Amino acid sequence: MRIEQKLTVSAPPAMVWGHIIEPSNYIEFMDGVTRWEVDGDKRTGLGARYRMLIHVGSAEVGGLIEIVEWNPERDLAWSSVTGVDQRGRWRLRDHGDGRTELTFRFAYGVGGAGITGLIAERVAARPLRRRFRRSLLEVKRAVEHRRFQSEVGKGVRAPL
Amino acid sequence: MAESGTFEPVSPEAGEERRNGGRPNGRLGSLARIAEPVLNGLRERFKADLDDRDPDFIREQLPLSWLLSSIWFRGEVRGMSRIPEEGPVLLVGNHSGGNLTPDTTVFTLAFCAYFGVERPFYQLAHNLVLASPIGPFLKRFGTVAASHENANKALSSGAAVLVYPGGDWEVHRPSWHRNEVDFNGRKGFIRLALNADVPIVPVVSVGGQETALFLSHGERLSKLLRLDKLFRLKVLPISISLPWIINAGDMFGHLPLPAKITVEAMEPIHLREQFGRNPDVDEVYEHVTGVMQDRLDGLAAERRLPVIG
Image (cartoon, rainbow over all chains, first blue to last red; front, side, top):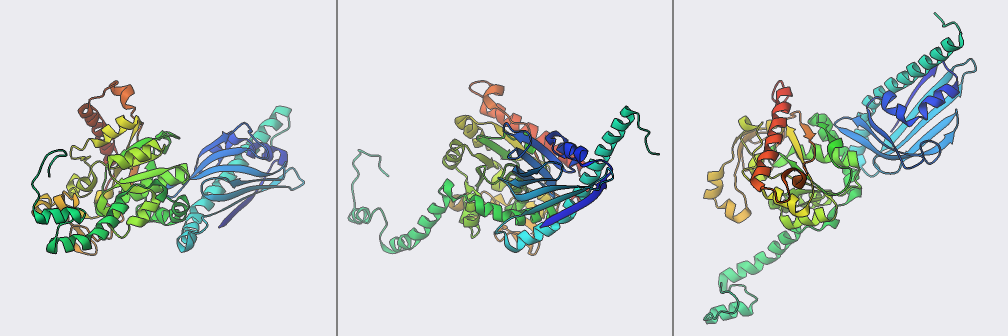
């Protein structure tokens, strides 16, 4: 099952990228995430590992994930090492006018679970879609707030 | 039976009985020979072969458990972060819901989802549960027959073990005692934790006893039918449940009402740190059941209506 959420952030890709690569931010902006801890010495970048959990229905689901794709200011993707099978992807595309199109994709499933697996995936999709929508809105709010603060700091007049 | 080293006169029948490998003769002997393969099969089922636990199988069953837990029982599990991240631990729960035990479904799913199916996790169950047709299924989930030997084996392998000391007694308590922790004075879990030197994590649940209307333990009936001697069954419960309406024994299970189940894992109790080098078992029992009852009172107070939660 794959879920995709997309929105435009009024900030350049570098600012959005800076926000989504910081592991300590995930517990703040990812709705339902109860854990996002660095596992090992590598904090960010290709091969960095995190222990993550997200509330879905009655359980906190997750496991150990590893960053498998790292293309600065464009793509970041992870894949599960243990726990429920999952892949996550951030896709950033420059709008050219100081704005960024931000896409979040999340694919998950349990191989071999048969019909109950298919049903569970579909049932879980609804709350997850809502959670990811809220998460993207939170990223947008946080990054645009930071941009506004930096522009005020530089003396740029804030838009009304 | 004579103790070893003492002389006992042997009758001709008894001599033949001994030559038959201890089996009685006559009709009783035929019956014993017929029953032997069945009994051997049951003995095999009660043995704790920890390798029977199959992480891939558990992973494949998680969606079904998740659907049951999330949709039917609207499960809510708290305090999983209080369970030690690694190493052996004895999870001690209060038990509810008749033979179907929805609290186990909700908690087992939560444990496997939180720590991953890779973490060894075993559940102790009554012999009859493992002897039932779903026994082989449960063994792959990590369920082993409740005995000190099996539990010690699991704990010494570094696994987390879930035990319900109240067992068959507690799951069938009348519904009006639903918010009471009732281990029936069973303290074996404390000796187990002390022997294995592992912390106890109390796991308190509420809601399971609302999945049917449980009327009586039926202890007298169980004694009358000698079930306590034959199957270690102290109870023959009577309840009103679907689809049977009047359900005696709950042997074939029942359709549980969709009661909201809330489970909370509490802070670990390190027995020797808290109660000294040689803890008094009775004192520990009072403490463990006391903290569990306090939390159960708290969880019960959050509920507005039975079943609905």
